[in-house]
Image 1: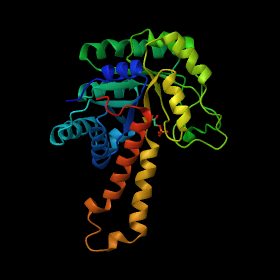
Image 2: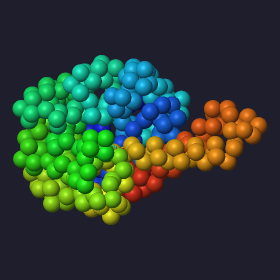
Image 3: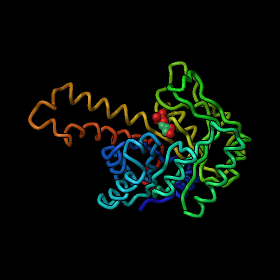
Length: 287
Ligand code: 13P
């Protein structure tokens, strides 16, 4: 059964480790991530962007697939199904479809609008036993033309949103989605420290987990990060393993064209990436 991310993240914050959010795109992704989490005896958060939700034909399909896998694969570790960077409308749809967690990304709206929408969603999520992530300080990406440095959130604004009763808070600390450019200045630990000082026990979320050096990940966890999002890195490992299979001509040997064979190396690569992250984040055996 899907669970809210609240308990796993509060435990992570108190225990000084982080739970990974790994984004899913299809059945292979979901199965690989769940297999890794179960093997590592680790809680896990399956992230679904609005684009990935649409790709999988809609949120109801995603809920059906994930619930089916939890049962058929005998998954016993805590699993949350979470909307990643949701719009207000997307959040409403996922609440209805049976997600156990949502992120409302109001970081592009004026702070007053972010506050009003977050407040309304806090009430709904509390009533339904769901977790809610809010964001302050937009986390950009290469596609947004951001180069060098991601935005840093205003700690006072973080406190304001945290005080609305959200479960976890994503704050920009110089991180961005996708690969980091060569001239990236790194995470702003000064900002993170200031945010934690004002938000106390609130589990903080680090987006853009792909490509952040290990020592920075560890330092971020020591300063209150309890959830780390990883997406691009699984896509890169999947693509590299699939490329290798085809370049070696394996799809041309015997029944190597069978999708269950063709997609197997990519799925194994996603699993290996997730296992590596679970070890780095410290959530192994924390189920
Ligand atoms: P990356 O794609 O950089 O790993 O970021 C993932 C993320 O933050 C999803 O919200």
